[in-house]
Structure formats: C-alpha cells, structure tokens
Image (cartoon, rainbow, N blue to C red; front, side):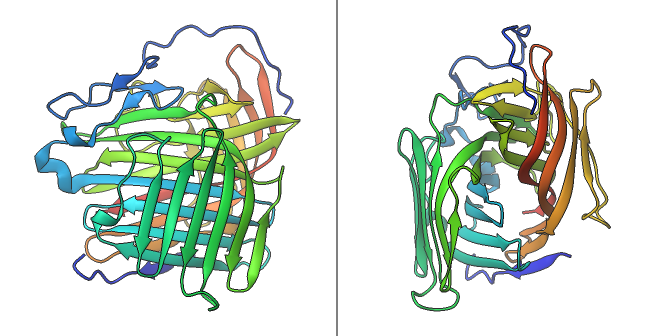
Length: 362
C-alpha cells in the first residue's frame, strides 16, 4: 500500500575465493579522473571500484543548475527494524528524513525537516563531512577514516514524535565500492553515484521513549551517494542488501536508472571488501502484488537471486508541485547464487535488504 507524505513549501555462501584475474574491462575507470569537462558534459562515462570520478559542482552548465540534485542516503538493516537517513538538495529546497521501519509492529516512524538550499553544503566526494541544521533539529554525517558517524536530532525533546539516531558504520577508503556515471539524453545531464554496501553498524535510534539498538554483528548499512543533473522525470530500480553469509561480509547492489549504462551498470557484489562487477540485472516483480517474490537474474546466469518480501515500505513523497516521488519498496531476505570473478560461486543466504521501483517528477 502506498503511504502519502506531504510537505507544504513555503517558497519552496558457499563463497570460493579465486586467484584468477578477470580480463580488464575497457569501461572500468582505474585512475582519478575528472567527471565533467570544462563545458559541463561528462568526460568520465563508466564504472569504477570507488569514487574515482572527481565531481566539481562549478562545472555544471549554468542553464542546468535548476536540474542539479544532490543527496546522501543511508539505509541500515537490523533483524527487527531498519532505518533510512536522507539528506538531499533538490534545488528549490533541502531536507532531511529519518525513517524507522519496525518489522515486528508494522509501524513506520519518520521525522522530516526542511530548509532552503543554503542549509546544506555537500562535500565533493563520499569521504567528506555534512551538516544540516533546521529550526526543528540537526543532522551530521562525518567520515572518521575507519568509520562513519551519523547523528540525527529531530523534533522537540520529550515529545512522542522526538526521534534521535546515533549510528556508527565501519568503512574506509580501502574498501571497494561501486561507482558509476550514467548519461541521460541531453548533453550536460548525468547521474554520478557511489554505492557503499556491507558496512557493519552499531548504535541506537530513539523514537519517543522507545530505544532501538543496532546489534553488533547483525546490523549492516548502505550508503547511496548521488550527484547529478537530471531530466524532469526519471525512473529507477535499486536493490541493496548487506550482511554475512557463511562467514563472509557481503554487500549486493542491483539496478539502474533509465539512462545510458552502455559502459556498465551499478550491479555488483562486494565480498570481504573486494568488488566483483556483475552484468546488468533483469528484474521480475508485480507492482500490483509487491509482497510476492522479486526475482533478479542475468542473461549469462551469474545472477540468480530471489527476494522474499516481509515488509511493505511503499510511499508517495509530495513536496509540492511538481516535486513528487512515487516509490514501491519492500524489505526482506535475499537468497540465491552469484557468479564471482574467476568463476567461483557465492551462495547467498539470509542477507537482509530492500528493493524499490521509483518514479520521480521534479
């Protein structure tokens, strides 16, 4: 069932490692490379094992500044609940959303704060710090070298709608991740993303007077770091799963946007900090019955995964005309097989995460 949130704008495994080395992919970017040319068009169209494409906001074409969208989103999955932490600048406004999905009660709690765009000053790569302050709270993301710390304070202290999050995510520049630059139809339009998955998480989330604990060894986080100049409407599919299978830390990223991914999509699996690039996944699901299994496959057979949903997190986020996000999203456990680089097979069992199909008009 789609929930509607609205804001009124005031002006606004069995895993077998292998020593075999796969053949070089000519689409892989292996050295730090400017993302954009001086004229604002994309110079680095491809994928990398980390955020090697260097983003420079000053190179955005002046006539496309109002199409610029920047965000940093964390999803953290525990056995009994999940949290989402969003910071975004959509050009007309900036906002923060802290969401907690309680699997046992079926409840969804959220706290939304918004300000003008000056309230956010995003870093140029995923290893910087971010601060957001509003009249109703604050959000701070910090990268500390070997971990990320997140602090969210939203709502009046002592009230039922007060929410606080204090989260620590293990991460470092040495851990591989999937970075991709996508092209859209018009020159100067693009989406640059870095998905950092399988980050072990600890911490607490407070909802009113109830505390939710992120247990060590059973809680894992994902970072969706995105910068882009977007067309007026867009669609995407994104699956993100993180956990441990057969003693191996595993993070799975699946899906793409409706752009040009000829050099490679963002489909990848990270096993014990090492990325294995996957072919573009094919998705099978029913939007009229989203709690039915979601299937992910690939033509070459390397991807064969099934998500069994157990929580409906679908929503419509209406930020005032024309900004509307319609999201069909489910949480659950994914199982199946993934073919790794070198020919071995990873058996995925009991890894938790979420998958979504999104349509946006902005």
